[in-house]
Length: 120
Image (tube, rainbow, N blue to C red):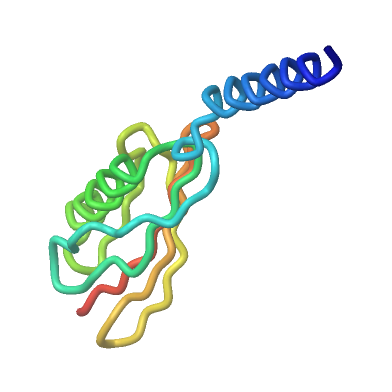
């Protein structure tokens, strides 16, 4: 009888662990590195990290942010409004031939960080 009780307790423990694991969505909760999208202009995205959202949403935002920048001043433009309902801030280093920048975007708990290098 004690062996049967131990097996039943072990089975219940395994079921409880599986139930907790099924509720957690590691893709949408933990920060993770993603493959950046193709850069639409002359340059490239160097990194993409998302938290509380998907890599696909991060890639979509990075490209949308690029087009926002281009609309506001051509190759050296800045984005001054929300992109896909995300509020973004950009820190950039500029030399005569290129821009290297880190863009941090947030929407509630969602966070998307991407970096890019654009040739001028």
